[in-house]
Amino acid sequence: MKIVQFTDTNVDYLLANTDLKVVVYTGQLDLIVDTLGTLNWVHSLKWPELKNWETAKRQQMSGGYVKTHKNFSLYWIIKAGHMVPTDAGDTALAMLHKIIQS
Image (cartoon, helix red, strand yellow):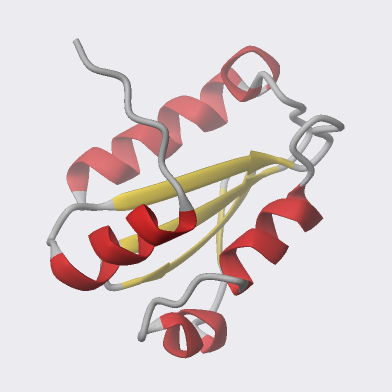
């Protein structure tokens, strides 16, 4: 198994040149990788469709929110810190089902 560290450039490439789903999730209470920092990172991407993602509506789901455009989704998980599956297991499972089904 090869572990790859993704950079902004890698993510931009995947979004613009593949059909792969790029999914990011953030726990609202995360003090290590906070939601504001995650949003700042997303807004720094050079993906040509970023403006369309930014204007897409954030959809409410049980225990959080999701915003999706094309092959990029960002999930905000409420009442969860850095360990989303531990802090909000039901929501994490619902998120996983949504990712797999779409």
